[in-house]
Length: 344
Image (cartoon, rainbow, N blue to C red; front, side):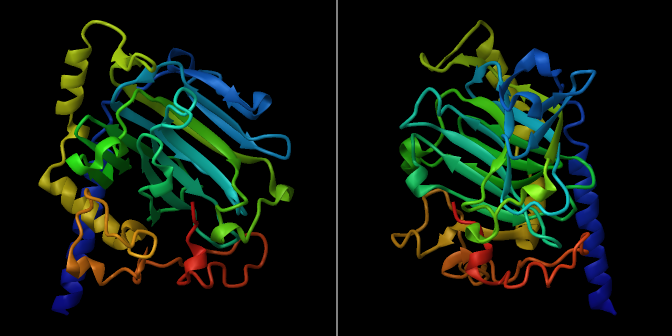
């Protein structure tokens, strides 16, 4: 009885922490599309709302679609509420990310949220990436399941990029923190980046290592972006310098904002999320990186016991959701196997 009471108390505390975190960014100003963004590709597959406060990105046989910020930024807070496509979405990738790849083709920086589609009865998975100075050959990926169905309503995904650290958030709860370590060198993103949002065909790798492809019978696949927020100093991507006066004050404001400060309560919520929902972390992938974990990894022997040599969780596995319009043969079966984790 006492054990059950303790479990219920812990669950209630988790729900409370999540609710408090979800309201933490309510005062972050959002922008109309025309104020901060421009279409990237997709033509008619990018559909703006009548009030210009939200955007639908579609994927069909013709094309995916996407948009980007009209400016580059040297650090900042970037956020959007995103509703993902429903039903059969194997092979579909929705991305919300920072990059300067169009300026620095071979030495680009990147911070990603990538949402990986699923088969019938499966779950969308979220992958975060950190690349600096073209370090894609030794990327810092992590993957997670979500504690909600992201196709029913929009949820808020945010990235804090500061000179000293990076924090990924879901609904105001931190899910990953990367603290800049001197030994990271150029692997820590340090050049101005633009913000992007896209939907595209990732059949080659997105669902069970590419085993399941996009089925355009279920197109168009629609993702919805709203509450678009960009806070930070604008910068010239070539000169790598802020564009205007007052940018030092902008950086000070960024560094002292609530979303840039990791309190003990927020770190506890982050650890709880990771224990419940993280399916892969590069920090425990001893096969891919046999020489040892990256310098910023905060590993522990106790936590290591929960991960395989491939960096996959032994305790967090794919669970089938309610079946869709078609019969799903144990959707998510074999989720314990390595093939279920998308390889990048």
